[in-house]
Length: 443
Image (spheres, rainbow, N blue to C red):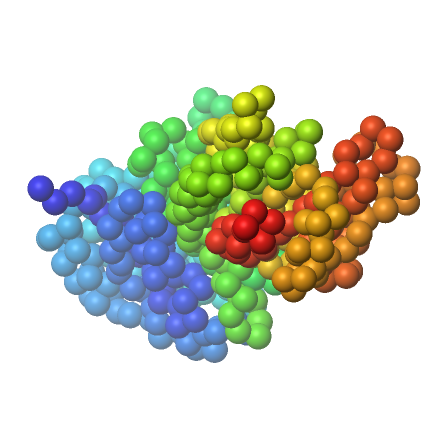
């Protein structure tokens, strides 16, 4: 039996640069488990440097698209973006009036380059009135309340003013345009108000943030049935999309709304790689025993390095790799993400410095191991622990990562010091490359 997908409808402009608009909304709907459909209000000639021309469709052309979609698809929610004129507003209100669907309105007034995307701003207000949810940024919010852009002094107060003025169920006042170290969004509804914080991401790739947020908000709300959770999830989706922008074009590039889904898929592969690595250990069980130091070993393995943000993107064995009294080796499953082991912190430090690696393991120091690795072409650096800066516990791995990065090394070893066991640390890109390195020591 085939699965049934509900549909979500985007009514918005077409962005020829594929950064916002109908095509981005449909992409988000599809990523979050719905079938995305779209009705185009205008075709724009634009790229990352700006909007060059706008070609609005007639009201009848828009009406025909909407009616055709509802004739066939089971639409359970609507998101609107760029709606160009009063004729289009009237069509949308007429066609949706009796549908009893949640409508999320992204009040798109200006493009990123400042181009006006609405021919008749006053008529656009009719679309906002009574909408289930609206998602203005700071500039759009002040225009909707005072008719002009102004500095936002009280985000909570402005959010409540919008709610009361336009009689919405929910208002999400986004804080991306408000200066500060953190991005604060405010959600208000008749019975309450709450705030959401994330660190501000500095990136040139921010095109499409409004479209992605509003479409993700609708999809998440229909999935979880809770607006607070929906805002939190949509905000995180945008945050990660900015963190890993597509870097296309010479101007303000698009964000990547698919990052979360790709990370989840990669994490499944990481877990499978960890399982394969344990099979390798079992294959060499008796010999592997000799590689494990007194503090035990652990493998750190990450998703693709360019998508790693923090330790939550790196897995290790929760119970480490342990040598037992009888000469056997036990792998301490489960594999877990976000565990702050030395191997995970060193791998993160290397990745953050641009080293292309996703796997790292620590093994017992032995001069013969060092020589074997050097003889097989591995770039080896010796770390003198006596020269470690006196900054206290917790930064050693950062120091080793920096020294290794400077020397373009793939192996770092130290001879230990009082209270610190001598150690070899090996890293590579790909689980099979780390296995290949270990085979140099085992065979």
